[in-house]
Length: 477
Ligand code: ZN
Image 1 (spheres, rainbow, N blue to C red):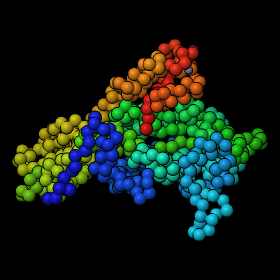
Image 2: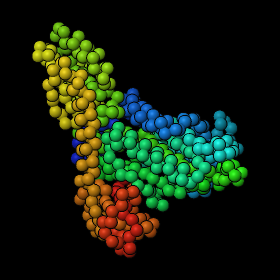
Image 3: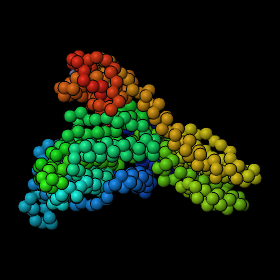
């Protein structure tokens, strides 16, 4: 056996979290780097993870009344220019097509960084009457943003996502939609990815370019840095006015539509890695695990072992996503690989187990072993998967709570960042100058103005003037 057949050691997360992340992404075979700097090849295991997140989210998007569509990759420059705030927000990251073959194009074409303007143009041509509303579209696609520094899943030139775009007759309908989709994201993240979220509004400075307001769900990674997991934007009539999207209401008057957009991306895979992973690799929550159970036969050359193991696989395949590793690798190697890939449960079955009529279930999240009689495994396994799912969520929540602190002045704020990085709850006067100063001095940004407000002190953490709101702050991915 060559050296390469062994799972290589990964950097301990306590020593170098960024290197740990890179090692896990590589060793668990999630991605390879693309040939253009900052692009990534999503390998089968990485893509299987994405597919499971996508399928659950897609199910809920459809359940809430939306239809999938597909719009072009290209946007003419003149169309992108139509809404001023929007173009200013995205222009620095746009990739431009200037040539078609040998010929220089008369007008530059933008590779979509997001598709608001395309949907707006479509809506202005296709919405005429109140009967056409609401229009509830979603698209699964890739987008390109020319980022300066990149990391697999967290920040890449091209990534996969869904973008919902909706048009409504009334403000209240659009506002309800914005919140409805934030709640869908929250459900997928908390109940499937087992990542606890904080729901709130983005500040004016951090909101989506062109939106009236942005709602967000924010999560905390193992190293105490925050990650924005999903956003939902209310546009009001801003885009409708720029793109002339009007409908005839029931009284025969022309009205502008009220719009929303909302998106979630492959970044979530990065969150999954950084919330649940440990020094042995990935830990995948059962509900989205491509392989929930990996069977590892022990002493598989002995008579009857493989047959029993395959029987077990067929039996368990009815209740879980199960696979078997019957390769000629050593069991120790297989165990390491199970841990690196983060399969929720490993099942061991060898000659002694067969003799005793039992199997061994090993949890990835705690490493605990359970000996289960063969005739009870069908009953035990689903319950165990649920226990693991719940434990991962509880652990992540406990971690977030431990790493959430209160600061009442900038000295405390800085001290927390130095000694116990995580979320900082602090009061804010609402002035963008304070928000900018905090970012400049500490590199921490406002993550959200949470829906669940608390009054942690009287005055703005930065300027000491009267505070308007409590804000979650953190250094973020
Ligand atoms: Zn202030």
